[in-house]
Amino acid sequence: MKIKGRYLVSAERDQVWIALNDEAVLSRCIPGVKTLEKISNTEFAATVTAKVGPVKAIFSGEVTLSDLDPPNGYRISGEGQGGVAGFAKGTCLVSLAEAQAQTELTYEAEAQVGGKLAQIGSRMVVGVAKKTADQFFEAFKAEVEGQTFQKGSEGSNEDKVNKVLEGGIGSSRRALSPGIWIGGVIVIAVLTWWLSS
Amino acid sequence: MYDFNYHRATSLESAAEIYSQSEDPVYLAGGMTLIPTLKQRLARPTDVIDLGGVDGLSDVEQSAETLSIGSMTTHAAVAANSAVSSVIPALSALAGGIGDPHVRNKGTLGGSVANNDPAADYPAALVGLDATVVTTQREIPAEEFFVGMFETSLVEGELISHVRFSIPDRAAYMKFANPASRYAIVGVMVAKFPGQIRVAVTGAGPAVFRSGEMEQALASEFSPGAIDGVTVAPDELNSDIHAGQEYRANLVRVMAARAVEICG
Image (cartoon, rainbow over the protein chains, first blue to last red):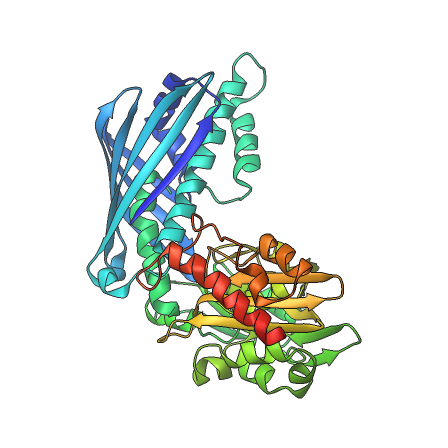
């Protein structure tokens, strides 16, 4: 299962790259994130509340950054432990390219489910994973553009970022991180399929 | 199943009151999705608020142009209702084709709609029949109600009291069902109103959607052949082991053509 997406971010590529590596930014953009701890420069531990339809569960996951090629992109690998249901893991390749004054962000993600989940199937795995990915990247785009907009203007940075976020994703829930959503959300998605079919 | 507090509400107001006072509450309608979820420990609400004891939510009322159905009306009751089958037989047939007898006798219109499963049948009926969702707080046109996969425009605590369907001149629903679950791999509701054709598709995408191209083609000529030339873009459609995007895209056209044929 592969999902892809493309975003144009109104910010310089270096800024986007910095934001992609900033756990504070990531934690604000990951839908349903409860905690995101930096273990090292390339490792994070996260817990995420994921809700899809009737299913609501807390996932613990580990996120690793690899193939770092600043400022062109990196690979995020994530694994989410879904408790009774099993686990899911996935990787996401994020690429940044300069596009005139903007930055083009593309991602290509792949996910696998294991254990009990693998027996369950995947009526809507792709849909949920795609939606969650888009939720994250839309929030991320709004966050980065909010910070850019900030420059040279007065007022609280946080306020503006929040405003942009609210306007940008149109939801009170914040988005899962690339690694985590891929793991966690797919777990949830499969579960949802399973019990509703 | 994890422990939770069980409440049996006697009115929509008391249900909303309990909801607002609970830490992590959930409403229970027919429970055809929620109960399996709880049994599998995939959700852990603190409070379950059963709406089964609320009176007046399973009436069917007919007016000149609309048919209003209470949110707690079961699929079997909709299928068996004589007013529904005489005024909108397509809706009657749709309800009679949901899931299996157990699901039809427990599952409810409001529960299905609020859950907004991407493969549920009712969303196609609501959007195709230009319905209005009436809640405890407002009235929501069906097209604004269904936001995305498992997402609706309902806010926290808001409850559906009934759904008001517009009565079409003619309508038909055709679905290509998953043989095990009877969920719609693709389901299409075609409805002909004075001056308007509506084509609503469920199962194919993340949520129900209208096919504007098919509606235009059918407006100029209402025949199955009219949509032969319409191509459905597969890019945004669902894909799983049962049907890929291209196959679903083709099914949309085939199911629509069959529905048009039944409409006559």
